[in-house]
Each structure stands twice: as C-alpha cells, then as structure tokens.
Length: 222
Ligand code: DX5
Ligand code: ZN
Image: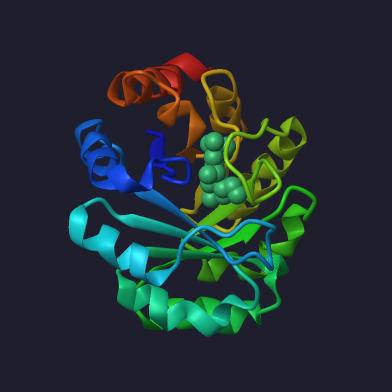
C-alpha cells in the first residue's frame, strides 16, 4: 500500500493546528516537514522549535526533510525536537555514512535524499544504512512546482538495486505529486508520496487523500 506524507509547507501557519487535525482525520500516514536554511536552498521555512511544537500537537510520525547545508551539525537537535525519521541530502556537504549512523544512534529512521540531477548510484553504497530514499521530483525549495518526469527511471533503478540486495527500502517521492503523477511514481517503484499543494489546494483534504489512495492502489496501477 502506498503511504502518504502531507507536507505542511504551504499551510497557513497561524492555523496549523487545524491543518494537523484535518490531516489526522484524513488518515495521513505521516507528516512531511520541510526544513530550509536559505543556503542549501534559496528559501527559508522553519526549524527545530516548530518541529517541537508540532510534535506536541499530533501523534502522526514526523518525516523531517532537511534542506540545509552540512546537516550533520543539527541531527541531535532534530532528533530531540521529535522527528521520527530524518532525511538529508547527499549534496549537502556532510559525510554521508557518519550522518546516517548519527541518525541511527538517536533511534530515528534514516532517509537519504537526492535532487533531480543526482544519479541513482549516488545512494547505492549507503542503501544498507537507509530506511528510506527520498527522490526529489522538483528542485528543492518551493511547493507547488511541476513534477519532473525524467526522475521516474531513477526511482526504478533504486527499487531494483534495493530488491537485488534484499532490502525492504521505502522510496519516497517529493514534489509535484497530483492525481496524474501519483500513479506514475508508484508504478516506477515509489511507496511513499509527499503531498503538498495537491492537498492544501483541495476543498476537502480527506476526500482528496482518499482519491490519491484509490488511484495508487495496486489493482489500479497494473
Ligand atoms: C520542496 C519540498 C516539498 C514540497 C512539496 O522543496 O521538499 O516537500 O513541499 O510540495 P508539492 O507537493 O506542492 O510539490
Ligand atoms: Zn520535502
């Protein structure tokens, strides 16, 4: 079954609690939290205090996506803020193995993340240390962008590699997921989809999430 990780990046932060309740009611599988530092990406979003507040306001697992420079410096803070999984970019300038091991030491799930132009084999050496690989299907930094179709073969390459190693890897796709692109990402091998704009632009988030579940159901895909 496909899992859904709604991103709150485009939520109204004054009424965030309302959005969290709505997403729980919609039976989201987890919450995707986009942390941006204005250096690794051109945008700035939020940091540890917001993650810690969200932790108190919801029981949903927190899927933290760090878009920050040299992320190894902040693993402890995000673990303590209540992240359940911590994802960081291979392009962000930290030693990858050391950072994955630090995340594991805090008892958190590890997620290695790649930008659209980074090839699949950049993550291959680290797959045994990863619970999840996040494949960006837009340039990181902003919600509401168009899905880049050319990342689909990369998702399949990573799925094949994980299968050949016997690893039960989660593959998350982030950026531009909507009713058209969601089934294509799943068909390519993804099993976790980040959903930002597709939910926050919907009149009824629960109904939209159910539509996404229906069209990504295995019986619908093949
Ligand atoms: C972009 C973020 C995404 C974004 C997804 O840098 O990593 O998580 O919020 O938003 P949509 O689903 O609107 O593309
Ligand atoms: Zn993200």
